Length: 232
Length: 232
Image (cartoon, rainbow over all chains, first blue to last red; front, side, top):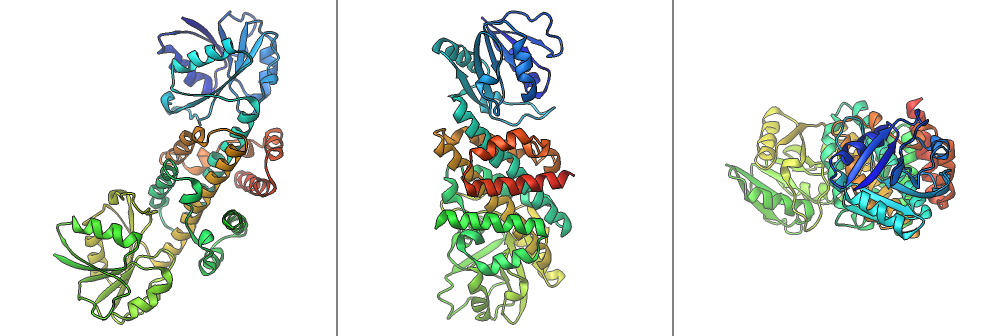
């Protein structure tokens, strides 16, 4: 049995707590980061709080092995005295939407083999996609995630805006959105690229630009240029 | 029984032919656009050729009702003498990958009610998502599709590049990509937006920019600005 202490009450902490409760090999305790007077001991202490609070919260525990869950923070953001690590789940968590942890990539970092094995065991108790990822690699993943999640979602928003302006239901685009995401499970993004930019179809590109507002035009032009440069 | 003549041998024509073969209510014939000396008669003639060839191919038939399948072309790109229409499927078709036509939105345009009903019946023989879409609306959908498909795929490519440069497997990002696409089936893109841009987290944005090449930085900055303007 591995004892795990979860500090935090946000989205990530809540989903993790629910999952650990069901795991046979984990004894889970959760506390709020606002009540740190009596921190219980544990084999592993997972600090799942906002990036800005990691330093302060971690400085208040003497537990033997403390990890944070942030993709954007290096391991040395932790200010506890003992062992440090990172337990980063590369997924978007929504309130009220159940998480299937079997589909969540666990990106784990520790400073010695024993700690890494403990993190592995804890992650395996609730999931199955386990990766050893150091702070530099995690930084890269975090930026890449901004492109494939945050920025992609913004392109969906622009698609939605164009539909609304032209009185077509956005739902017409949903099957295409789904297929675009599913296609690159079997095809590299290079091979999956289609459309007027990669075909250098100037006539269609001009027709499209005529239909867009200034902000949309700027994005259309920059991404078209970037696609064309990437295949030159 | 509705007789359908399919002109063209590309991706779209091939997938359509396979689907119509299985439809009880359709008698399907397919011909190459290079052999237009003897064009068979049909209730509906579907010209599934490249945008540039639509005018020429359509000018060679006297059939009573002729449609093209292009999202990027207006209905008057057709140069046949009789009735005109559009049979546009808003999906990305890949060679060798089977298409589930039940998931394909059929965007149909005709110039009279009887033709519209015929297109409806033909689409319903192989699919179930049927939309009446005029040339202006289709133009808008076509641009929106560039954003949610072509440009999104390019963001996947950038994510892939960042992973390769930093020696992390791109597959770590696949669950996030899938979840991002599936999230907006139940959440509007506005509500689904997360990340440093919408949080105005300047520290993380700076850290990210430091890791990117010039082209990636330019895209990161423009999309970050666009996200921030959209929530102001």
